[in-house]
Amino acid sequence: MAHYFIGLTGGIASGKSALEKAFAAHGVTVADADLIAREVVEPGQPALAAVVAHFGAGVLQADGRLDRAALRARVFDDDDERRVLEDLLHPAIRARMMAVCRNAPGPYAIAMIPLLTEGGGRTAYPWLDRILVVDAPPAVQMTRLMQRDSIDDSLAGKMMAAQATRAQRLALADDIVVNAGDVAHLQRAADELHARYLALANAARVP
Image (cartoon, rainbow, N blue to C red; front, top):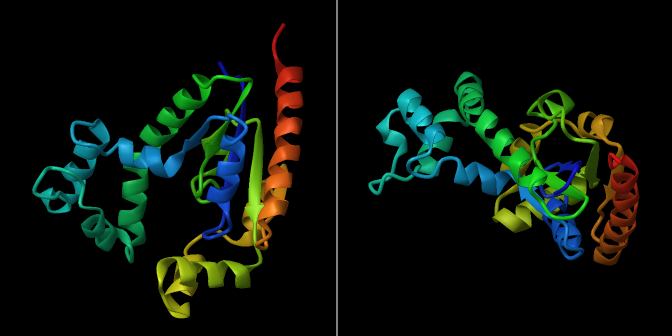
């Protein structure tokens, strides 16, 4: 079971998924907050019941599953409602992520948390030993986001502005990988960090 934990984060379209794959290629378990966020709102889960209790049955599809588009429309321009949703979901997501990481094989595991900075940083995730930030120039993020989601620069700008600033993310970082589009560089960075994290995890192992 893993005993050393890395938080992986970065801005939208910064290359988090590509770096996640590079670590996974080394056999490292990555607990993905986005995937876990879907798991905790499956039918029958307490978090889904809590969401419906607050937002109403209108956020459900006919089959009883969460209607993400309807919920997104409810909270996108309403900061108070978005905070309510976060308060309902984040504790369940954090608990599940920690369980996945602690039960991972190998000496260390990675928790990929796109909104780590916005979600409370180290205070919300005190069990993280280090934080790795994937950084990309804002212009590169904008271009990737527009291409990835087939959106214009106005919407892309709003999506980026809704997140923490680049400076706020970097202030949390123990390690930084700059991803300006060179896949080979990203792979080399993952290889080097994997070796470093193995060494740190082995040094931290309790005799």
